[in-house]
Length: 267
Image (cartoon, rainbow, N blue to C red; front, side, top):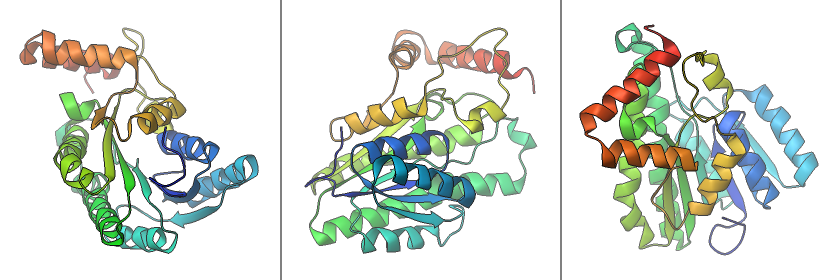
């Protein structure tokens, strides 16, 4: 697992830190000795988490209450990264809605693009350039989703923007690796987060394996430096292999869409 030291330094930035997978990463990183730069729009929840982490693990913390949809968010994050010589970045934040594509408002479309593509792209660019110019190694984890690999209905825009993170990671793996910068995309399945439960999935007809945020963080940090794309959870890996390698793509898409219908009805 990634640990403080020569390769990743002593600081980690977690974007989307206040709850869910971001909270899981913060706790796991702190337990392994990393000082943390926490970034989230929910300043109250972030402060509560920071206070608990400081008490439990005794690491140093910096809180950045930022809306990651703000075009200036990458610059503000990079100011903190540079000031603390942060060399490990985890981008968890995501804009997400479960509904029919045509029911989205223009503001929703902008939210998907801003939080899921614009800000992480600029952060990866700025973070990588800083490390390369300083001649230092580091690591980047982009939390994507199995939806970015398969594309289920009712989450079309979310899936498309999460696919962006996967393709970006694959393309940059070789480029950045030449300079000692590890990058990995974590394709998480169903995770017990406030955002997921707010979508009100119906488990009467089926229940997917629901993982805990800390398990996502532990697995991703273990794979950083060894895998370009990682899928936490043995069941998720087996299901993905079956869908992508054993049966025709058309049938795989039908199975995934039927599963979404069972969980969310006809919406």
